Amino acid sequence: MKNSKEYSKKIQSLYNTLKRKHPKVQEKSHELAVDAVIYAILSEKMSEKEAESAVKTFAEHFVDLNDLRVSRIEEIAEVLGENSPLTREIASSITKVLQGIYNTYHKVSLEALKKLGKRPARQMLEKIEGISRFVVDYCMLTALRGHAIPLTENMISYLHNNDLVEADADEQQISGFLAKQISAKNGYEFFALLRHESEKQKSTAKSKTRTTRKTKTKKTTKTKKKAKK
Image (cartoon, rainbow, N blue to C red; front, side, top):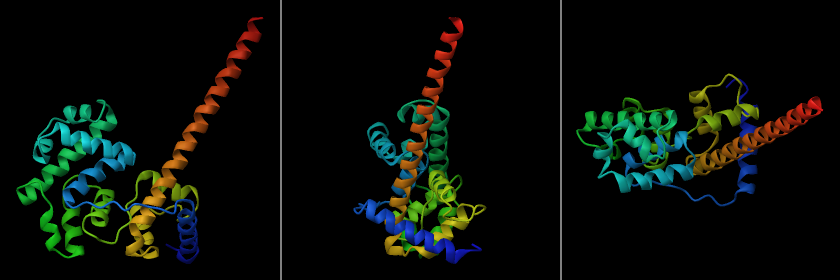
């Protein structure tokens, strides 16, 4: 980033502020890398609570990950709660990535990655068809103990909207920049804090929008009633 020193101070200030607001962060880890991948695909588009619920539902509905791999997109979407564009998108990503893993390793497992170094493991993950940067970063962080800061769209928007990174910086640039500012041992804590804050802000914004719409509707109704009189 051009003004890296300026933004570095802002990120450190943000991190300290969030730690004071939310002092306890329970670190999530995945024993199996493929489990981290599934959870990441879900949580990239859903809230963490929704993703956790979906993982439990998958375990109850599907025999194993191979069964999930060969299932119809519509079936997976319905298991997620409803057959909507969002759930079909998630379902499509899951089957595509699981198929990519199967094509590479002839089984639905990524345990072979643990025998590699961090960089080769990341490169192998990035080659899997349909996998996003968020999913790669999340898997590296929570299953392969790599240094990464996964970023959802909400998190990127939060950083941009609060002038914490350059306006034209993309996901790759922001992720690389944050990894330089936040040490590996603090990677998960920063990710969790930033994610929580970005989702909280989005929720507040939606609430304000709904309130504004209701107010406008009431005013319009009153105006119509007066006009009739």
